Image (cartoon, rainbow over all chains, first blue to last red; front, top):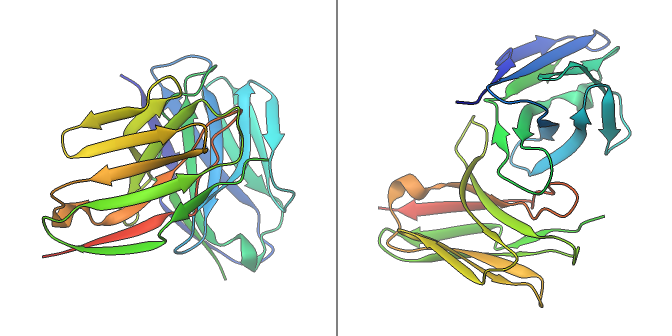
Length: 113
Length: 109
């Protein structure tokens, strides 16, 4: 069966520090991968999605970047965090191709102080 | 890009009553229409979905109806229970998932 792992679960980082959040998927090949951010009490904002290794599409220009160094690994990074980067970050995967169910990780709650 | 709205943004019902949440979208190319449930501190989970060649789908107490001409689809929950309390998101898929702003459902015992 397929599983998605996202870590860490919580993170407190000072303003100006770097960020690296990692997401891995098991049990499937060539998945579509997504990073979403959710502000408190708000909806999910799509940040990045990837349809293959090295292929990253950015939905919102911001202080963040994403990379996909391996087929089932998706990394969200920042060189210098801002206070506004605080939020709940969710990684998700879906079968490539036509629309199908998206499976979400448990999320990372990032607080920038 | 896709513009997705949900109504209402909050909904309170008595246990046992029905709840209906409506999602409107703008991309006529959307062909997959899921509903997700998010509990506090967790990632969303799919509860029901429908494809563009079907008008209605039911799974026990949950149903989804689709009006592709009018570009909206709705989530129906019957005989609501306290454990149905959560935030519900629609996420119509055209070229990508675009999530609606969410509806907070509270089921009062």
